[in-house]
Image (cartoon, rainbow, N blue to C red):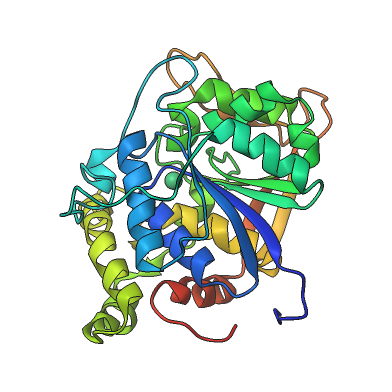
Length: 333
Ligand SMILES: [Ca+2]
């Protein structure tokens, strides 16, 4: 569907890299028709310092020194810090980072929230944000400039649980990104007036790449010494795969690699991946004592509020898998 004649998508990525963030970055960096204006880092899957280093690791490998990196929030709005080393490794990248002295040469002096505001002003109505970490930076940008959200074309958020009956819920109704900074998630859902599309955790559980397929079609490609992408993909994914395989016995939903952020990025890069959306009023429990960060989707209009989000409830798996292949090889799409 893309060609050189189509205007490139102007994209800003806000992320907490993160193994699945790595997949999403690899997909975006390999997609032919996108202009990545910047990558903003937030603490989440791993610390802010790790995240900044990890994104440099990827950008250096892809030789993309044209993309600025912005330093964002190192903790949630309430001052707390929660990481997920059991899922992403101590370094956030599955413990593959051997060289601790990776050059941090793409890091801008401009803080994330300031950069987000500026980029949105400079490109009014054109920027799509892929928010694939906690929403701290996004909300801080909104606090700096109330026009920020209206200057965006749209924002896609990987976050939130889904309570549609056909989904199971793995996490007692809490998804990681919203749980790390529930207040930011609550305020963004409530206050942003731009188009907000949500890729819930449960949707990403439906979009797994089977272990068999990975073994047959993905990992062997790393044997090609010129295929740096396939090597990074195999190396960075192993820790997450091991975690998922341990979880398979516990949660029936996991039947393969579940790359949450890659699902979000695929929807951003090619809207035709999206097969079904539901417009609904949704809000987030900001201070709950049991399920802080829980997203409540008002399917039956109990709150009598106008819909404020589009929850993506189904995707075209064939198209998603085609985009996911960009993590390991280049091909025309
Ligand atoms: Ca992430």
